[in-house]
Length: 243
Length: 392
Figure (cartoon, rainbow over the protein chains, first blue to last red):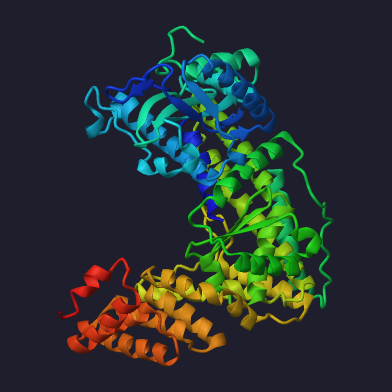
């Protein structure tokens, strides 16, 4: 019953957030002194969390099952292609047949929360926490418990990926155009993507690439390829310009 | 808003039996589609998100992973709505000490521990489960989403166009916000009345639904009295209320139950037998809410059925010990001793009794019980601090 109240508050906040324009901000961070030797490490890729939907005129997210299914298929395929070229062995873990899948799923969500905090409190300069103000400091972690997960034995890093796309509906785009005339800034669409590398031994986030305005439409094969190349931009050990 | 008109009509229709005073109304259930699959784009999207949410819930630390307790709640649901209907629902019991249950569009139901503690019979539990199931059967999540979307769409246009035309659209915006909450209250009433139909057709008496809301009002009154607050219970739903008031729910549910004029066994002893294993944990969570009078109300409600068992006496002792006035410590000491006489003596009772005695100045007597506590639970997280009360 409270769930409904919360969703109402979300409606209110979504509608109040009309005059919002994303400010330019940093997109990539990595732990001080972190390097990845080519051909020397094994990386486990967890099930990426991919959600695609539409944004209603009033700003509500309308999840779309068909678009999400297309995007999942396209992005998984493009990820496999792209990660073949990173110079290290990347293994996609299928959580449905992995022991301790529950634990890994929890870490997948925890990563989402930590990455969200990085974007909020470090990448966006205007909102930086006092401890994150130093130029080189990038100290974020999901905790040391990861090394106890038996399914990760033999792996050095876990790669976690999350994307959420909300395409502006026709009504939203119309509102945006009329809003321009009225001098009200209305954003249309939301395209958030995050890719992060976590050290299995320490749980530290060693590399994160997070962007609130990603390009590429994952519903199409070409768009998915572009999206994956943006997600993996600056991936440690990957040659620039590839894939 | 066409939909709100319909909802209002339904709400009005609910009062008709009161006016006609029809005797022995036959509750007629709506047709049911087994193994329902989501249809529209919106509905399939909502189910996709709900499926993901349900997988996440399965991982939650809050979930009470007890097959027996789950089977009990599922059995009550099936007895209420029927075997064919209840197969569409999965029940997840969450350890949250508040009165609530939720229903997802895909058939995932959550039942909170605070609900299991408060209902006094299988019939009262059935009333709440029937209400939640009614949300599912009437696809309320979808309709609610569609209504919120139309309202927020209209609101956005108003805000932008009103800005261009330099017209004050404040009133219209306020009524759109109001329509969201009003729609929600309408859905709750709808679910209450369909839930009552299930109950009237089940082996349980339908008057139990009204009892649930009466008890909640009494508990809220007790809480407010204890906290020296003004009575919160209101007679009319306010602008931002998502649900009708407890008073109006108790009222229209009782009227309709009288019209159905059904009877049945509420099975109160069976309810307490089913939650017996978890009762100490539920009680201990409730005591920690720092709601002295509300908790006293709940405890005496349970005692009304089961009598003052050791578990209840222990919980009451903890309640007094937590308030901790000198006079409370005398009461708690007595209650701990009574709990032990009733045959309930887990380590926590020994600790509570020992601490109450020590704090009342009876240090050496208290230390004996604390030693017993440490012997019974040497690995307890508070062992180190309790040792400080025990002379070497």
